[in-house]
Image: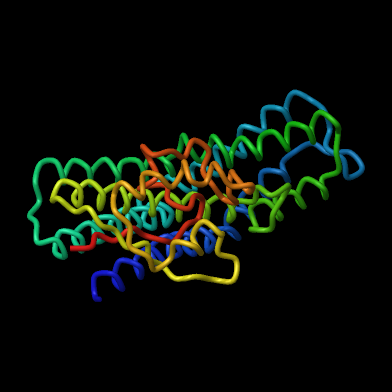
Length: 271
């Protein structure tokens, strides 16, 4: 079915394209941050604990913000394409269900796109990426750490290698895939339920590390009432909460969060 194939294709390609675009900026981000580190006062290869170096910590964040959020930056262009992909998925759903845009549907689409923009705007990036860098560099200054160790941290964190499990690429990938899947599902369930859809195909296929939650449901059709019971059913199992489950998953949000973080499955309206 074209709609199913096209929608699954979008959930597999739109977030990945954004992640690839951000990954392509890592080398430049790393170079810019290292140039700031090179301005720190040092003694014998160690960072000096002084007021000037403490003030330079903010320069790191200013350098990152300036690169990512300057007008016409590659980051903002990639984010724009990501948001457009959400609109493309909504158009597929409208066509499949034979519906026209309504104020309700348009507002839901705008809200979904706004949520994604907020997830990757300057405030959110600073909340995770910049704060992680600030904490580490502040500790390096306070402890008069080695310059080489500080640069190694930046190489691992920005370069995509996990640093305590929280590298830049890992964060972007998890957030992008989950945000796209949530936005896509929220629009489909809004239109589907409003148009009287009561049956849903859990589709997306399986991979070697598919979580049990998805394995036992992939390819099956469920009524709305059956989908709403999934969280309650899972709570009775020994492996609850299931691997990858988003905290707070319940009957009110199961249609949108589905299998949880990084879930590539969709609930497709069955007409």
